[in-house]
Length: 370
Ligand code: XIL
Image 1 (cartoon, rainbow, N blue to C red):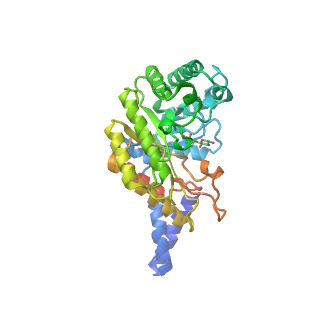
Image 2 (cartoon, rainbow, N blue to C red):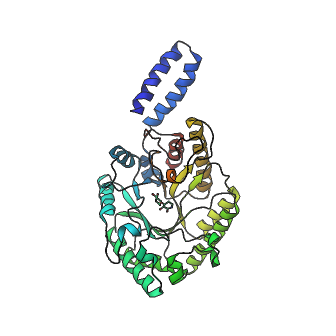
């Protein structure tokens, strides 16, 4: 195991330091830092005192062969986010035919490990089966939403930490009124689908926090500015209609070659908080596809970027939870879309491929500890 190697190198480096070899003194500092990182309490250990839960997305234990990764997920997190298992194409592949095999395996794993499940996600433009993308009338769409939401939300009532009810409703690049994303739901029901989905979820589970989840709002780009504006307008409209929605989920798929719009993002979050929404960080990862350097340099750049981001969010409000989209660089969805010029794998997550804690982990620990 890598942990043993770091421990051994501490001993060797300390021995070297004792005889005064300067290169080894540097190595000893590095190894000692890695060593103390491994000894620090897990991220979930702070949630009772800080009120901030930690978790990560992953595959269902019924299909996950990497048992050691699963163990780490339960060690570090008190929420489990199904990366795909609760999406519509998995749970209702044919009208009225439900399949909760993976969802149930996650719920059972969570219960065994004293974790809760983050419900991801009920209504999205993507990961829908063909029969849903072929809906054409408002009546059909409403009936589909009613059955789907009632069935899924009631099945996991009491075991869900929060539900991402509507995922990614904004996309100004689609050039529709309000910056709304073109989706089967919007085409059949207009933007009223968002209010309807939240009301259906609330009617089925009066207790669980309900969230709207969105990405692409962090940087100093025109696209991010337009997205913040459209998202804020939608959140305002939902408040005016008394839509039962509690939180804004900040997906937080970051890219450390980009520059935050600190002022723009702060003002946006301030407005969101003023409207009475709580914040959750739901899908944090940091794309390092364009960052030059060796592993250690890249890991430091990723950690700095996370710290800068969390500093902006926390200066507005402490989020209810932080979830990363995956836990270890061993598996990240980004790998299928981004390849580095130097051919090495991306390093976007808190643990490296050997499951050792990285500087990003240390930044998360700093923010989730009370
Ligand atoms: C991604 C999964 O990680 C991939 O494995 C899958 O192929 C596509 O979906 N925003 C979301 C998540 O809300 O559901 C997406 O998950 C990543 C972007």
